[in-house]
Image (cartoon, rainbow, N blue to C red; front, side, top):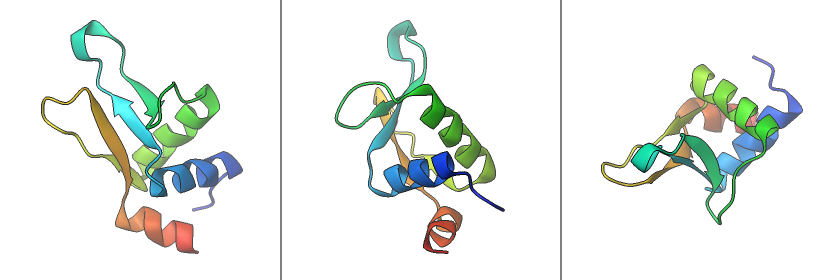
Length: 82
């Protein structure tokens, strides 16, 4: 599996704990957010969607929390180290 440049950048951001998912609490749309605040740009959102589908990253859902962190999976850590 070959990763595009945007996917590698997004995977690095996940590894550093910079991303979370807003769960659409109180009718808002679900979206990716920077952990420091603000929305993630569309091209990185698309890369994150691909990483989640491939099992390289996952959303660590927290019950009752408005935001959940995006975390690196074991497979994602192996791909990042390669």
